[in-house]
Length: 267
Image (cartoon, rainbow, N blue to C red; front, side, top):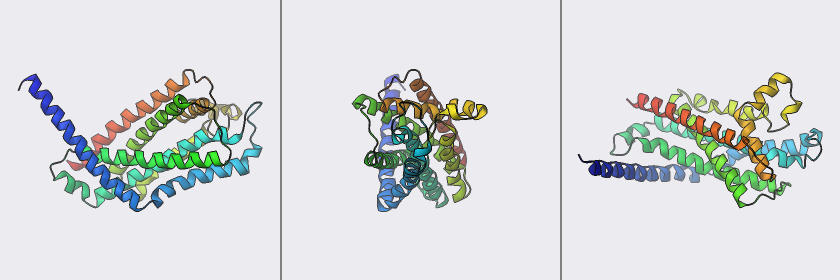
């Protein structure tokens, strides 16, 4: 086959994979829209944390001179928790499809193998974005303010999308590896707790030395600090590249592991 012919075949295969992903994504989104309580449920925990820390604990937390309203400091960490909570449903939905034999039936049809996982990823991204919008809307209602312009908001959105994709692929890995419903969603608990060992709720300078070292060198801190700086219209420096590197590195790692386990399970 000529090189030109090979490119045509590859383009055709890619087009088929995209078309199959679109069809399966519509199926997944229909399931979500038929049970909107799913999105509401994913937003309940971060909203509870937001209200609890702002109105109960916020007055006791000292951010130092010029710290500003606590809700402004808190929101980036709550957004990370929202993503961690939301992506757990991708693992649950994929596990249900695998256990119900739906994935096997789909694989017996002339569709691209990659489209099954891709559809779950796109659905997770869409549902998570809705949850993030709900949380930001509540934060604005209780006093969150930012003078950030469109470029800063786009940078925040891009970073949160990258984080959502990386954690969604972790959810996919959990879904294809799990042997029970509880196992499919249990991976999210450490993700939700991780922001508590970061700069999400208090400055790391107030932490004991070993805890501070861990907080300063784990991905949530760089992501939260970058989002906070963008909202505050402050220089982000190299922190944004550290955050992007964490997100991209985790995305590639979890994607490779998820695809490998998925292929092995269906082999």
